[in-house]
Image (spheres, rainbow, N blue to C red):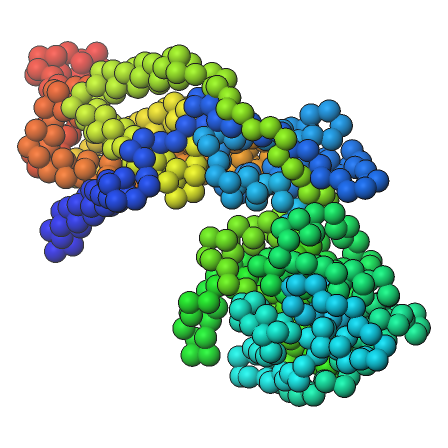
Length: 608
């Protein structure tokens, strides 16, 4: 009964494989018609050309740049470029300060900004906050004016079950539109207790700000201490006009000193304490949709941060300290490139070294920011000096010659297969064609979804893959022939040969894939394209042999043409090196030994 069911299993496997190929084809066609996918693979810098950008450091005042900073920035920019896919981009230095980035295609403005932006994420306590427009200097007769300018109206922080703190203030003091955007979360992965801090800070805010205007009374003892606010800082804070796009161009962001800055919309300004936790202390950053209380993802996009052990303790201690502070000093601002992106207030301790921030991000924007935070911040920011289009370094002629070389190799493999295996060699041809179609679809779809680009090194990997694929078929067919020489039926030889051949195929492909993986991880960008395509085609080879070649051979073994050992079938006993004879039902047996005559037998007996 089991044998009768085998053809159905093989048919279902074969049909399922074809369905997968057709599904990928349909996906590509649909993405090409209704989406942004191309019908052909994207080409790399050496084959298509692209854009070359020269980045120069942004220096303020007497600030200088070192060769170590340039080298560090080059490595970080290279990682950011590589995160967009295996595209064959090049990142080099020019002179002592400039960095040259060569990318295939035409990068968008957002991609350019993501490369040259410092992306320095810092966590600073909020000391003062208020409207983004300048305010008059407070007079001695009206000390409460300073408190009003700092946004110290009556506020409250209420702990909720999701760990979200919402702060509210009048529109004149904090900017209602901006405040709605700045309502963010600070979430612990394992919260053991929830604390609630409610404070009325009209008097305290005024007192704190007034002391800031008069000058510090003592040396600051923590990053949240109002003694950081000097008269000079208070004056700069009051004069800052966040509606001016150039207001922060000359800012010097020193992590060890307070910072006067704005939010991205320019509707709110902040006076922040020194950096409590730096972006270099982030060990991982991921973007996704925030999970609600019922465990279902919401529409809110968040960036989840994981700190290293030392920063996790610092962040936890800081959250405990800020719980009992009045608003706005219970807020911890997250600054990106010296601008406040979010400023949530604490309503519970965060002891686990993990936090999440939301700030009205789009999903793609959050993903880009998470990648930049994960790779690290640039030691300095860069300005775009020049942006030029560059021609291909190899061009269509080299691509044409490479494809011709691949076609010649393919024809040699096809010719050898037909000469050696006759009709069975057509299975090799069909398998190579199917593997080529599958590879084409996967590479094209990767270009659409992951911005993968095929360079000349990748084309070389595809050519080498022809031999790797043919080798798998040769191992399988020779195993079948060995089983036939042992006298097994063709159907039994196919199954037994497959069980023995697949181990060899897996070992050989496993070695190829391991070599490609090591080469991809350790080699430079010019070789990674070769390693990627070699590894990809190796996986496709295993998939094709398992789900296309073997089921097809098993189905063909039930056909009379092959089962009877036709001379053109590839399983002809006369071509297997034995004097075999067909005995029926697809079985070949050795020829009978020649019988001797009675005369010769008696003669042999007399000689004996």
